[in-house]
Length: 288
Image (cartoon, rainbow, N blue to C red):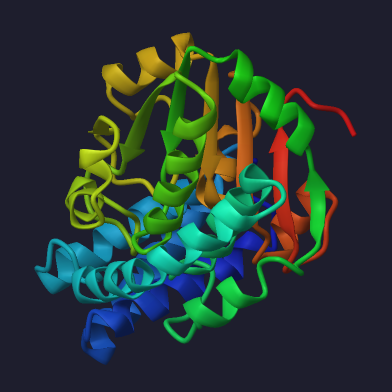
């Protein structure tokens, strides 16, 4: 997905919020905004929003000297989500359609997004409304069929905390398929996106192989990720891509993709043809 004009003020807002989050001085905040403006001015029109996000957060890390300013909130989100996991497992096992329930909870976890939302999101409240939240687009039957026919599945993660709900979906997938499942984390810290350290914290590495993509972009920029993940993208039978950043960077690709996300941005809602706040499970080759 390309940058829309409405993405520009959003990028500047994210730059300011990130600079404040890192406790930078007002002078440093101003300098970051000025550099972000220059980046936006010279950004190619076909670039996706995570490209500017990548550069903004590099600036914040450079100014602050902190490799991972979001580390404390990521750890807290992981702990809060892990506390919910046992009860959610019970709900999935008791559901009429366990796969649909696990998909809903995985998408509910996508609320934990410091790029699109502030730190005030309520994980427990989002989980409680997961069963009633409307799908703007839902290709569950196609997804189920793709899972049943796959021998290899690549799961592209998004945020810390959210990956606990991804773990629940992966556990559910392992009950219905013998496919080899590989989980992909970010290569370096950016925003509250999940790294391999986060995957280790929530027990994902004990469940499936976990690799990183070698990139610090808040998405999956194919030209920047490592060869290992590029090979998986080219050869795996099914790719599950979580969150807005992965949608923004991969929606134009021809891989066998299914996107799972909650729409938190009206621009992405417009691109998908759904309302803000709705859940989405959509295949990139699945016409409605």
